[in-house]
Image (tube, rainbow, N blue to C red; front, side, top):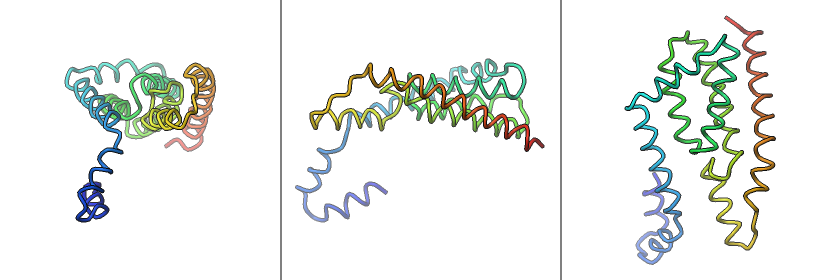
Length: 173
């Protein structure tokens, strides 16, 4: 799709093509490809199965918290894209009912979406945002971002999982 749009945009002009190619954030694309390879490697080495076993703590509500915070911390450290794959593989490997797996997937999404806000490397968007700001002369100290991001993210995840658990109790099958 992107290649077709590039061809349509550039038409016959090779100069326009190279202008677009120079503007692409190749370092971010290499990073994204690398972390997805890491996720596939973790699955093939059995790490995701082991992670699924580790997430089996207590009842369904406890497993939701464990899954959400594991996804959050992992997303903050290694990026949310591969963590979504890793958590899906881990949840799939668990011997749970389809209802429990659905709730665990929601918990993983809560953690995986909010966790990257804890560290600047947690999401590609944040890394690109920092780069754009730096190019425009605006410097946001990483420690400021982290100092605000961690507590706000942890509280938001707590609220999200509490809401999920309440919904699970009210609408349980």
